[in-house]
Each structure stands twice: as structure tokens, then as C-alpha cells.
Length: 173
Image (cartoon, rainbow, N blue to C red; front, side, top):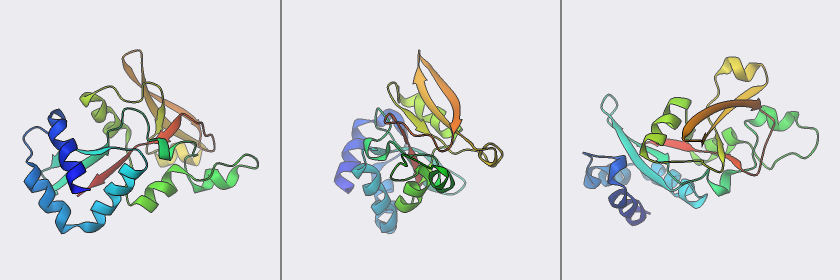
């Protein structure tokens, strides 16, 4: 996994200018549970890569950087509550449950927009993003995609799911 992450890091320097792979690798080796989460992100098609460094916490930020929403995480509703509310045609899982199982977080709207600064993502798919409690309390959830050269934020019932909608995750190491 380390060699795969290193190759991706070196291939996509625009995502992490000024950061050194040796420092990232040292952090990963000191936190093997985070390396496991990155492996899960990759196994489900997320292609995780370093996109920044938080000076306040000393953590490296990894996002799913696959061109489209990760294939292994599509056709899911937003959360467990939405999954349980479906009467028919339930999906196999929810975005928040899968993320928790993987030890990652759903991207926030701000993180999603930040990701779009590195390229064009979700031009054919869409991704659930972290939904504020006030919206979720009313039964909704939010997702984003990129169409017509613009990043859009939408809403849907949290229990909805589509073959082209998954979720993107983030991990702090």
C-alpha cells in the first residue's frame, strides 16, 4: 500500500505542493490503522491521495481522488436511519455506515469544493457529502457533482439511492 500511495503522490504533485513523501510515510508507519483505512478506500475504488496538511493538528489530509465517485461505494442511501426507513428495494448499506466501517469521514461540502480545485471530479456521478443535522432532521441529505464546468450542491431524501451516486471520504493522518 505504501508503494502505491507513494507512486500516486509522485504522479499528482499538484495536489500537495510543498509536502514531502518521506514525512507522509513516517506518519503512516506510525499509524498502521490509518494505513488500513487508506487500503479500504483504495479497495473500493477511491484512489486516496494527500491533498493537504493541517498546520494546527500536524495531520496530513487524504481524500478520495478517483475521477468518479468510488465504484465500490455507490448505490447507497445516506445513513442507517434512512436505510431502515425504506420499505422496499433497500440498498445494501448506507454512506455513513460504510465510512464508519472504513474509519473515514464523508467529505464536507467545503472539502468537496476543495477537491475540485485539483481537477474535474464527478462529471458523470455524484457523491453524498456530510449533511448538517438540521437538514437531516427534516429527512433530507445533500450531495454534490460537477456539471457544465460548475460544482453543484443538491438535496434529496436521505433514503434515496442511485447507481451513479456514492460518497467520497477523507482521512486525517
